[in-house]
Image: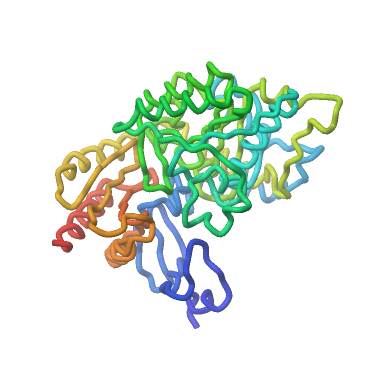
Length: 426
C-alpha cells in the first residue's frame, strides 16, 4: 500500500471531511519553493504550507543549525531553567519589536500565542484590582482553534458546535476602505459605552487571513489604536500570519505610528521548520504581574515552552531575514504581484483584486454562496494541483502567499495558470 493509502487508515486530518475528501497527497521531500510527492510530481508551494515557510523547504542553513543544537541540548523544562537559544532569540526579537516591548513569553503555536495574550490582558486588570473583562474584536476575525482564540474569532461554521462554551466578545467592523469612518465610530462608541469594563482590543493588522485575505489600510487602523490608547484599552496585534516580512515590512504593525501593547507571533517565526509561538508585551504589563502575592503569577505554560530546537530554527530564520537579499526578494515579489494586480483589476470574473507586500488575493465572482464552503473552492484547488501548484483557496478567494525564494519564472507560471483558469470558466 502506498503512503496515501496507509495515511487514510490511521490519520485524522485538520479541516478535512474524511468521508468526501480525496486521498491526501503524500509529500516525500521539499526543496526551495517546491514539494515532491511519492510519484515524483513537483508542486510549487504557492501558500508556504499554511503560511509558515519563509525561505524555502529544507533550507540547508536552518536545517544545519537545528542539527547543531540537537547535539547540544534538545529540551529542558523552562520553569526555573533557561538556555542560550531562548535568551538570544528573545533579545533579537525585541530589537525588531516596538521599543516599549520588553518581555517575550514562549508557547507552541499561533493559537496559544493568542491564548497567552488574552490571559495577559485580562489578568493585567485583575492584578490591578479592576474587573475589566470586555474584549473587542473585528468581524470576520480568525485567531485560532483553542477556546480562547475561538472566542475572539468570528462566530461561524468553524466555531458553531462550541458557541455555548465561548466567552462573549463585542465585534466591530474592520476599517476597510469602504467603511473606515463607520468602523472607527463603532470603536469609539463601544468603548464609551463600556468605560469601566473594556479590557482589550485584539486585531489582525492589515490582513485578515482565514476570513478571505480581507485588507484594510494602516492609517485607519492607526486611528483605532489611538482611540484605544486615549481610553486606556490594551491592544493586541495578532501577527501570527502577517509577521516576518509578509506585508512588506518586518511586522505589519511597523506601518503604524501607534504600537500595540501585546503582539502574537508564530508561523514564519521558525522559517516553517518547528512549531513555536511567542507573545511579547510591554514593561507595564509585565510589572502588573510582579508581586509577593503568588496569585498574581501568570499561570500558563507548555511542556515544550522555548524548546531549544525551535529557538535555534527561529534564530537561523532571523539570520536569513536580516540579510539584504531576503528583503530584495520580498520587494521583488511585491512588485510582481502589483504588476499582475494592475493587469487583473478590471477582469470581469474577478472582484477586489488586492495586495499587501507578498500577499496577493482576488475574489472570484460567483452568483452562488461566496463562503468558505463554496463549491468553487474544490474546482480551483484541483485545477491548480493538476498544474503542479499548491493553492488552497478560501472559498471563492484565490490568493498567493509564496516563500521568498520563489522565482520570477514560477510566479509568471502561476499568473498564467490563473488566467487560464479564469478563461476556462467562460
